[in-house]
Length: 348
Ligand SMILES: NC(=O)c1ccc[n+]([C@@H]2O[C@H](COP(=O)([O-])OP(=O)(O)OC[C@H]3O[C@@H](n4cnc5c(N)ncnc54)[C@H](O)[C@@H]3O)[C@@H](O)[C@H]2O)c1
Image (cartoon, rainbow, N blue to C red; front, side, top):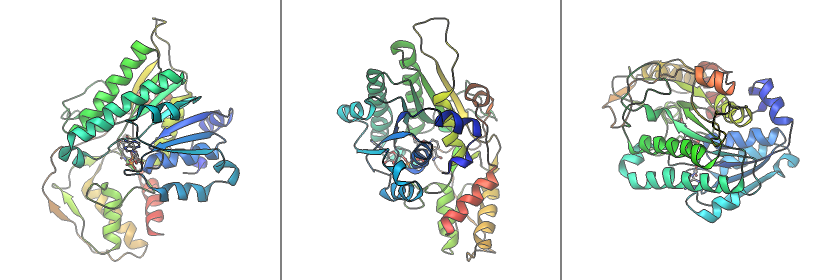
């Protein structure tokens, strides 16, 4: 993701000092955008990834978009966040950890809950421990709107949580509890970012666990009718990946208020989204028309409708005030701008 898509104040604060960042999951969809932006802004980056869903092609794409000098500041550690030695090595002399590595599929978590717990909970605990031992300045981790579970209030407010509806959601909630406790008990400053549905280039269109936007784009351009799970009135708060990159960098650099107790490190959890709802029926029309305008064979296509999926939330829209006030987050692109960039990327 080009640094030009970030607010100028964030670009300036990152550029002001050369720092070392550890990005776990840096070969994945969101992580590779963060890696690219950090390199572009003169930073040193350690990427820790086991390539379970991450792709060498994502890193190759980053390589093709940054200078030789920038790529010289990139280091890859191929390994698993469940391995203590790997975590320790990845955090050595690091200023900030951006922890994105996770088993991120709700569907897979229903099939293999123990694996999801192991990666998302035990792996995160190991990263928290390694970051604390290395004395990093702050640990920023990726949570999810899935933690709201069966709480139906719209928009979602950080403190109003329901019961998680999938092992994935439970693992992300436990991750938040662990991180907040690390701040309280072990002095590590932490910020959790609850992403809603992120959209952008490099998101994986293939396989049973693919996210809805890349999967539908892929189907529409191949002339295949996409299936909407449910009646299509389900809503999501789709967030351009540029905003998620911005949130990660802003969360690292912002000064967080200190607690009255000098033993407690600052800690915060906030929603990252646009704060607006799009139904799956609306999304289908936007994608169908966008693909057709770019020459795809789907101008008059209608969707198929299937049953609702277990573990899915019906309506999800974020209140983003906490992020605006807490980390100076401001969405820069609208959903349609983010979608247009995504369509251009997938259709070229
Ligand atoms: N994409 C979204 O809409 C969305 C929404 C909410 C939260 N999130 C969270 O954002 C983060 C990044 O998601 P993404 O969409 O880029 O997914 P992704 O699958 O593209 O990226 C995850 C990365 O983590 C790596 N990884 C997985 N297990 C690992 C392990 N044990 N050790 C080392 N690396 C490992 C994968 O290889 C991959 O590169 C995840 O924590 C996810 O739960 C994403």
